[in-house]
Image (cartoon, rainbow, N blue to C red; front, side, top):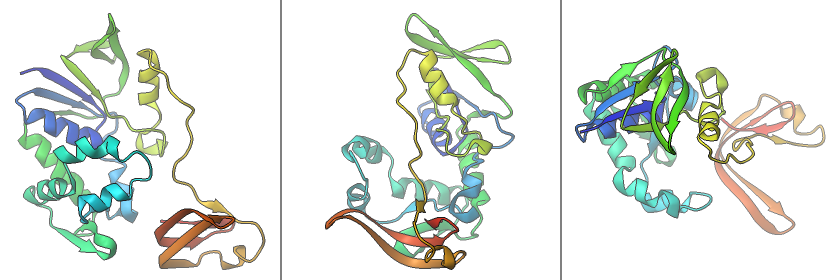
Length: 242
């Protein structure tokens, strides 16, 4: 049995803490916000699209690059596992078109409540409003964290702070800073989910129009370089998604 600190109370941090606690470890989850899963609250337009219920082979086929990287992770914990966990903790689920999975209540807060219950049932210590200032790295080993100027020592540290996708939810780049302080290289950051700017006035005239079940294709000359199925929204500058 060891002592494990998990930094970040988002989706990844909660599942990491839960999994670590199942192996009889003492687990402390540190979250700088006033509540867990702050970004989960706004996913799926506030409904939380938890996962997709399709076969895992289909999931892997739709990973854009290097799906093999995720193979071992999905072998340990896949879409059926997360659905079973959430339902076992009292939140009913439903499937919608495209095998998308949502809570029956259509409230993302119910998903977060289920995950929080899983953490408490597993004995995880949850500390909110707790910002990690830095990692303690000594002799090329991370042995703890600095919180409010004090050292908090552990056998293992899991950094699950997210990226910089939505800074108001707490994803403000702490993980990249920790990585640099630990001597790791960080590549140039860029957004991975963006709208499209469209030239001309025709698209702008459709501003505000929202469409469902759209399959969009992008070609470079005659070569298909991208396609995606889902919702599409016309904006003042081009097209966007949900």
